[in-house]
Length: 273
Image 1 (tube, rainbow, N blue to C red):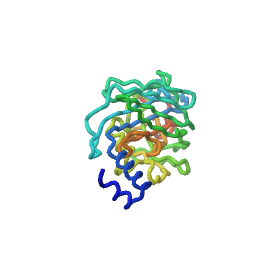
Image 2 (cartoon, rainbow, N blue to C red):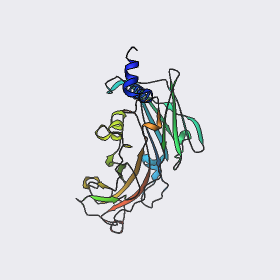
Image 3 (cartoon, rainbow, N blue to C red):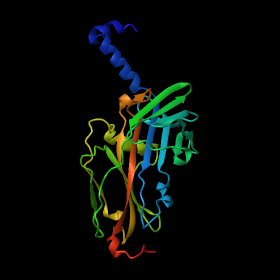
Image 4 (tube, rainbow, N blue to C red):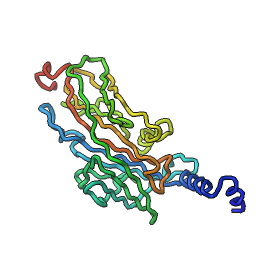
């Protein structure tokens, strides 16, 4: 440490400490990626939501992995961690490791609730070292779908003024349950890419989403579809403790689900078989 006196003169003691803390954060090899989702209550004469993948009205998945100093995610999942989740009326709900190594999962079947408007916290302990991620949990987006639709055209949904960082979209054909379109993370790599577009975290220099476009191929034929849209918020480095802030993330959103008829509900006398 013979260079410390010189560095102290160059930066000053306070600035030097900040530099050392920055270096420590960046080289932290503990990577945590969490996604916490809810589902707004809804009813439809055309389908039973409980029969879709949105039957659980809350779910949480946390991926834990190690990374080297290059800040590249390694193929080293972190198992046997103790994970507790707290938000609103929930305190220290255990999030247990699933059959996939390094993936910790809970749903409403395990007592998980979606605590909109609250601060949600993941407390993680591995090898007796504590880590933490927190996020302010967003409400579901408010939007209106077109009352009619022509095959071969996109639809655009207005989200102006709702201050979401990103969106997750899933479109399901109501009669078969087939997913015809999705924009969402499904594993640790896609979660990183979703939460760090262009290598920058969603919470940095936020440019709020004002609209989302669903492509024409999401609606391949005259039918009834389930359109699920969640507006997403993301935690920032200040809401992370002892994790790699460049690679880690905690995102959250609540699905608003609506039926969407092509060409229109009035023109569909029954769900096509």
